[in-house]
Image (cartoon, rainbow, N blue to C red; front, side, top):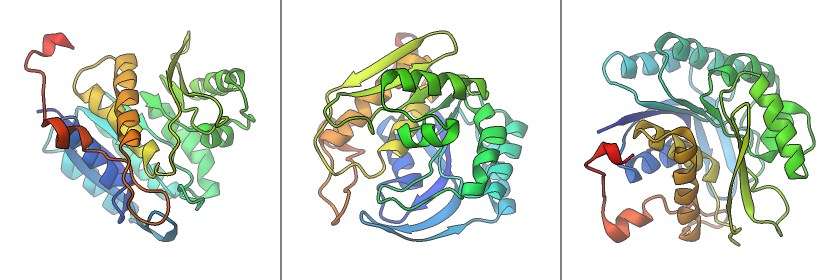
Length: 275
């Protein structure tokens, strides 16, 4: 069995963060491990409080995993502070996992800031260059680049700028563009662009979609898929989880991470040459 590690904040309501990542790994038949960088008291309506884990404890959690278990892919999500980013950056440089998927989480679905403003420069200098693939949504890409994104051409300009910051691949998620448009994500590899498009799903139940998408990419990379195929597989997966999203809570409900398993059971390819 392949193993994947998520480094992120926790979500006590279960729809985003560490909890969403571990469910996503499980849905892909990947053994999931976690390093908690922040404890977030949140539900489908709001964030009540955030408590960051001490940098030394973040480092020790990462050491505990890597000194004992093979890590085939890492997903990095919410890193609230400069200290958290520096701790994670230090350890990932030390252990150098093959695949690092970074989701630059900045805002909760309800609008609460999850990354301190002063940490942006450290995200750019210390974290983005570690990314095998960076997966910002439109507001995050705007914050990182300073570019106002309203069209696909704007997405391309932002992707190029982020690529120049050191990320090997950049995937700008198009969910925040016009509600009349299909949901199109743009992947840039430094030379060419590739788009992934599905029909937009009319639902308010999208809590944790960014976390789920990025961890699905990490799971697919752990399983051995090439990056563009890992993104395509993850796009299909996140679409399925949104189609079957759960009416839980009074706000933005969670996606259904395990819907396919509930319906069909777990299927794993026996012949890895099929990948």
